[in-house]
Structures are given as C-alpha cells and as structure tokens.
Image 1: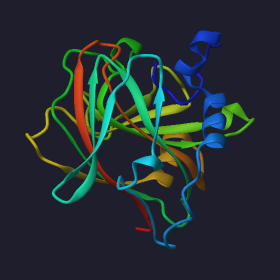
Image 2 (image 1 turned 45 degrees about the vertical axis):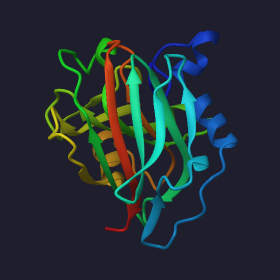
Image 3 (image 1 turned 135 degrees about the horizontal axis):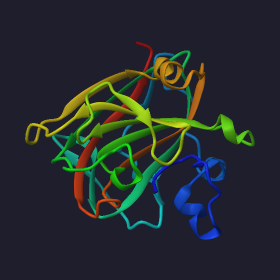
Image 4 (image 1 turned 120 degrees about the horizontal axis):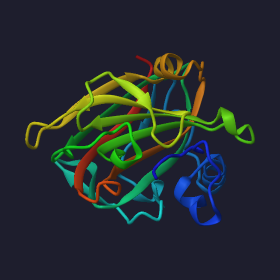
Length: 232
C-alpha cells in the first residue's frame, strides 16, 4: 500500500508504517527539517544536488533503489523497483498563492502492462510525484495529489487512489515513452487541488517521489530531474 493518507479502514499496528496515514504525515513533518522559505517570491526550487535533503520512507513492501547521479551536468535521481515500493520524501513549505505552478522533468524506461490502476492490485506506476497538504490533528484535512505516469489511463484523467479517498491520482503522462527521452511538465497545483478535491489550498507541506511495482511484483524504473514551484 502506498498512500500518505488513511484509507477508510483502521490499520493494524503492523500496518501503521505501511499505510502511512495522517499520523505518518505529522510525524514525518516533525522529524524532517523544512527547506528554507521560498528562494524568491517567484520560485521555490527542489533539486537533487544535496541528497541529505531527501529522506527515504519504507512502506515495508521492499525498497525501491534511489540513486543520486549526474546526467548532462544535472543532478538527477535514478529509481529502480523490483517488486518494491518505497518513497523519497522532502518536507517543504510552499505558498501556493505565490508559486502555484509545479515544474518537473522525468523519464521512464517503460510501463507496466495489463493492470487496472483503479484497483489495489494494480496500484503500481513507473513514476509518481505526491504533493501533500497536511491537516495535522484534523485527519480529514490531510489531502494529496499524485501526479503519475500512468500505464494505461488517458492523459488528464483523474481518479481516487485505490487506498485513500482523500488522495487523487492524475495522469500527466500515459503509456510507453520514447526511449531515453526526458519529458518536461507544468501543473497549476493550486487549481488542481480545487478541481480534484474541492479545496482552496494555500500551502503544501510534503513532496514525495515514488517508483513502485509491489502490487504486480514486476519491475519499473525512472529518472527524476529538477523540481520547482514558480509563480507562472
């Protein structure tokens, strides 16, 4: 299971870390140092030049390997999943009134065929980026958007996570990529929260990257480039 929110059930003690609900978000945010305030009023940059700024999170589903490397002089992350699911997380404090647009680049080496992403048995993606607004003690206020490279859903389609109703999946890309090609994305996060979850979100608190294949027990690999929030 790979959600940063409660599902509708109550996790057992053994599943607490695996299910990673609101308690996990609160503990993670307390433990991780927050990045400095926005670089300027128009940009908030999250690159991979400092690996210590990113923290792994284990869902007890096997470890996806995240490697910090340089490609074409740029710091990037290489993710490799072999039937595993773990995330790379970073605490943030992004003012979406100032910098609502999320920019990132990514590349996947292939997709996972013959699965239903709307079911728990098919909740695997070669690449995804979580953006989380923490609700603190108000568990129902913790919400997230997952920007995913879908295996088979149409681009721009959206659906609730198979594990957590407060987490929405949005297919930014879909299907087999062109070999070795980097894709560059731009999303209005503030507008996406409003459209998908009906919430006027002013600040987000956590970002997570994940390449996972634990539900299908297959393999997936991806690359993540610089991530930043901008004014427009």
